[in-house]
Image (cartoon, rainbow, N blue to C red; front, side, top):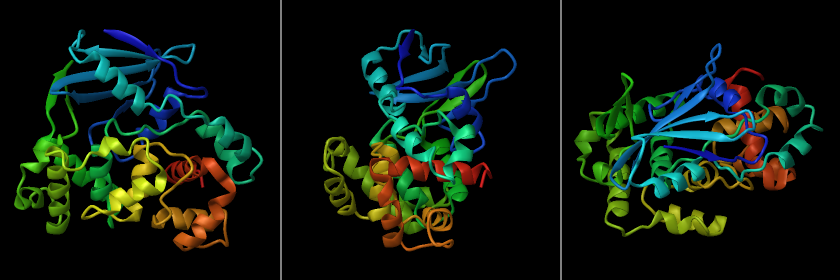
Length: 302
């Protein structure tokens, strides 16, 4: 099966693959940079209503994304197409950010390297919430390693062309774990409790994450922070990376405070409140500015 998706321009899959393949990855997203005559690819295994579907994504000369699937005729095609369209954030506009960034002395030089780069949303909000829990109060690389162990232990797998792909664990698979099971994967006892408690709420339907998709930012924050183990940082992280809201960012993130303070502020790390005040001038494109900060830092462009 092959179908097309049309992202809002500019979007450069080759540049995304080259850049994101240099980031710590947990084993779900597979970025393959272009080489010689072979195009860049994104590969991922999805669990769609109990069916495993592997996606292989390339970009055509006309900017369209070409998606091939294995199996070639998935039974849950409509649900899968909706999931991958959501993940690739097809409607995300960058031009409003670029228009402002081109006039800014900090962003001007890095746009040449990062032009057309967009982050993926997570396929599900459950995955994003689990990511938020795993990344709380520890370094990003360490959190990714711990999450990779979780995916290796609980994610369903598929072997295709000699390579093993793993889907992100389902809520039910984590809900059935004991605290000691997750401690064996290097999670702290408290974090293991958060992961299990939250997954049980999702698995039994007592908390419906998808109901948050169309709610206002503060409503989403209130709903998420009402759950055990979630603070404002986690809620704002879900808003940006999970829901793709561009008018908000995780101001409580220490790395963000350092980068914003150093390059847009007084030259040193600032508080969350000061960080929000500095970023006010970026209006509805705050998320893009912060994302490009993080990419530039990770790639040592700054």
